[in-house]
Length: 252
Image (tube, rainbow, N blue to C red):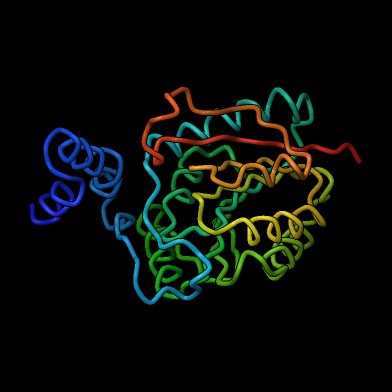
């Protein structure tokens, strides 16, 4: 109760404070409540590994779930067509405690699900949460038959794409028949966003970009991404409910 009282006071009390308490319960805490041993509700604001990144706070459950589901539906109609051999990789660039990795895994739509995280503490937590959710242990910077992974590193370097390239080669897959789904909960600023897109675009010709709280959306537009999905709320809605999804698919 102390946690909810602090949230109530922080947001000014009254109806607004009660609304934020309710959002925290339904959009954050219940996710962990229904999954024994999972801890994604933690917020980390201090001693973050890179001060160019936003502090970690979990995405709202209904928002990320809607983004994943509708984006994959669009992919099946706009990209996959009848090529059922095409593979998909979901990756959260700034995955924190691994909430979206769990959601993507539970959907069973993606061939591989993982994330990149710069903070060691959060990497350890995301690995723990994956095991609690699926009963399968994975280690950072590796992948096994579970199809899950967590990479410890910075999204603006090419280490994570090298890791994915190794994965693709090990599985004897054709990179031209792979669509990369990237999730970003406004985890970093404009420059890092652009650098991470440059890196991913050098290797993947088919990319879906799921952008929650899309502050720097102009970067995607400048790089030739098209918006195919956005939230249906008023522009004044709280940022945790706002999102836009983009894609760029080049035929090779």
